[in-house]
Image (cartoon, rainbow, N blue to C red; front, side, top):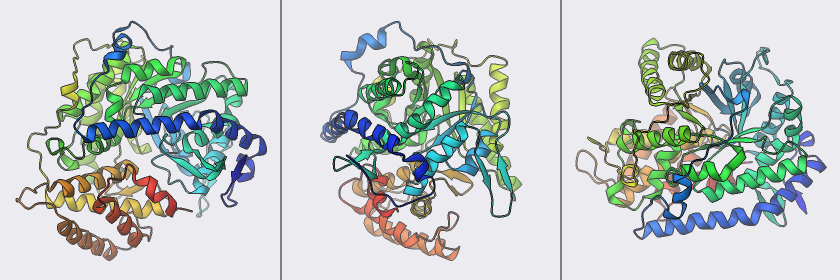
Length: 526
């Protein structure tokens, strides 16, 4: 039996039909127990690491890594991915992104969408309209937004396996948020996408193992059979944004089988995962975020391995996010930031990536120019198989950062960004503009996990002081006062600063590390 416990919100009658709910109930019944077992396996791995175990390539899957196999060829509308734009599944942002000139748009139901009931249902309604080219939006000032004749290829990111959708209950338990998001998108759109000569495409977040990818493959096969759509038509790109997944890239593509399309360097969540996984290891403490660039040795090793793995298997390798939001008032800020974006995208294109991510439509022309210079008329550069790349486990685990340090300014920035983001997220905005960057949950995760680690390990600042509870509290109070002085929430300004402060305190000061901030914070949303 399925029970909907969410309030009446716009789009609910269109999306949560009796047939759609029956589909969700069967999906949860078929795969819910297996999902829970995989989450327990995650906890078991972390428990072993906490007592001294380390990550390594699995000898049991060496035959997969050494084997001569490839993923299926990409569909025509998912072959040229030189610039991909991302954003929450909200009508105005979706229209702007689909019209941006990017080759692909990833509509996000995950880290950049605060999962209020209205947002998750509204996101599904917007996706349904976008697939049928009916999506429209009118702003309060009367400006109308409509889809162009030519739009980006639509890809959808559901929430990760660790999350639940508490507003829908099957057998007395909340349904998996992954199954809710992907299931409803497939139910409402798979047949229509097939009729249009395309198919449903996904980005899969926060996988930690090939077994988790295999679960997705079985979900896709089940859905195709149930919805009578073509076998193997669904395609999925996996975000390699956990350090565990970096050791299983071949295995993850292999496990997805006919559904595999590529891998993406989800670098911000990858940093969060690296901090979280080794949070108790003094030898693997990372410096402040500003020093964690993509040229840092362990990050360079991760991206080099990703490109080599993808191209060896005929899969797309997609680069990381450029989160800069161009300023309408400060030309100097723009010039500095755009130079950094150019350097980042030129590095990715030189190293063999087939495409890259941007967060704002104004970055699409720059990223396109850079990848055009390398690709020309080719859709990708999968022919660059990078045989010279040799990445071993120690390369992925070498967290040394030359000149790395923790400063009071770095601590202050972590607190500032975390508070502003939580303030916005609690108000239902998961994509917050903070310090000219489009920040999602990964930013807050990096910030709060570093603060927790530095506090519990007594990490010393560059001036010799240890980072203590008292120092955290003093800086936090100062940052809160500053944000209130600039207006509730500062740049993100949503008016939930007091609650954000309480939440950040629990994330930083509790003895036990919270696996994901969204797990505890979710109950605070409508």
